[in-house]
Image (cartoon, rainbow, N blue to C red; front, side, top):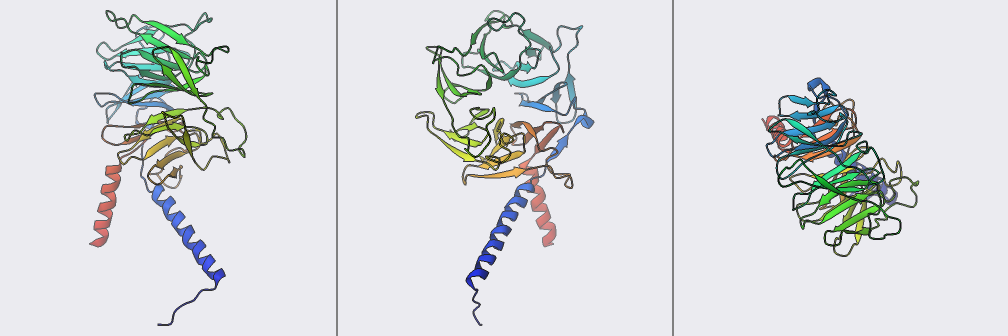
Length: 379
């Protein structure tokens, strides 16, 4: 057999073609993930999904701009505000959801304050608290809710800092509260009153994401330690997201991840050092890649909600997959702008969009259909 020799220029062309084929294959593999969809046509009250929660009983809860939705796998029950019934939810625009250790569902709203839902009585208790120096307060936006190991509820707000809600041991719905705000002359105060996300790590330490970096709370002193996450590429235009920490997550193997506008940041809690893993929006369309939610699938891959698209990050190889709506593929993500995420107890990844309802991806179902297809081909 006569050996084939390629000129150096021909070799470069072949190499480029092979590299392009590999990239196309990788992209097609990513987009081969099949999503199922739920929208207002299926009974959802509204198609903007601000938050997703699976409760201890297995029900899925979805916050929208027009009510709270509970899904049992077959149908929706919708909870909406009734101005003539004080036991209903205080506002229809839901911003965040949280289930506490007692099984109560906490519901943050826009311009309606905080609610605590008691499923035994089906009553929404309106939790009243007031910001320092503000007369009528229950009009702010609640961004995140969390619970500490003693049962106190923590509330992050857009412009009024952080609140600690202390339940009364005799009457759970009789609360007292304490507010933490940024103080110009106090370096140990909260770094910004615009708080974005709350996270208790595996050591019960409270981490607070703000528009001005990451904060670590000291329960003994009541003070905050600030960490500036400087990851903006100098080529990108400046924006409101430059210093923002918009999502926090601790993976199953104990790695601490932070969502920023430039990409995922791996943060070392002991030293405060960090490493950025930039995504494709790091420079072009900067801000559209702002990571606002993180969840982890059963394989250890991180799913990321951004305004520009759904992303999936594989920590083992430090690479991203990207998922956008394909109008010619009914199994693609229904809308490219992603607003919320959740992985349920069975491993299904739930994806909330900013206008086209809910998507969900079941890795087991995808794997089964792939195997079935191969079997049919072989026969």
